[in-house]
Picture 1 (spheres, one colour):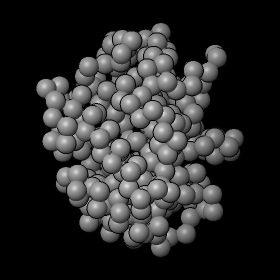
Picture 2 (cartoon, rainbow, N blue to C red):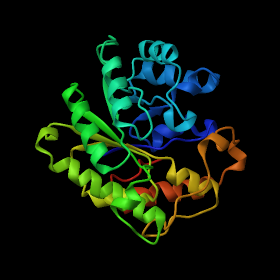
Picture 3 (cartoon, helix red, strand yellow):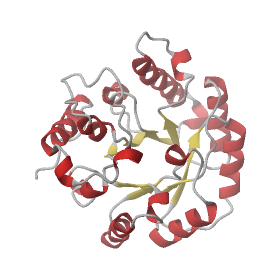
Length: 266
């Protein structure tokens, strides 16, 4: 799995030390000059970039004209076409709409699975595959995960529910050639439960950073609950407000817990 952790602005230039690729939130490109310049440099230096559509941060996908502009300008390696939260058919309609646009040759369009329950989400995955998408994304936050795997710990149930859902996706014959991206997490140890399946190609999560911003140090097993901190409220933090030792500890533990490659030597 390739891993990327979203960080406050002050850590952007340091993030290649611990990120396998860069994860871009396009709405920030239009409101933050440092963020924009970082991704221009990422393009120019050949960093691998996955561009989101900012639905999680904004509640809906970012402005379509601006998305088209930034995909053409930055030429990300992958672009997550707009989706509609927990709505299978609207998400499939959006995925079909975005198929018509020609983007830079290097940019691969990927799509997010949505649905009101597990059956709806499995249907959505099939519809997206029929449209030609061969990399699909799975959010961490669907409320029905807790119905799929009831647990007294809500965050644990959410993680286990997604694991069960993804395991089902991996068994479907019509998805046998599909790769997957996992969007975020409730608890960090979840990624170790996939046994480094090669079809789970990439993940993104700010979890170790957000935990550190709360002063929480990862334990050997990970965490029992999701950090309450949100990047929307911490993006502007200054370097001297951070506990960098806590951040590095959590990043290393994240790799160890999930049997991923070790943190690059600094």
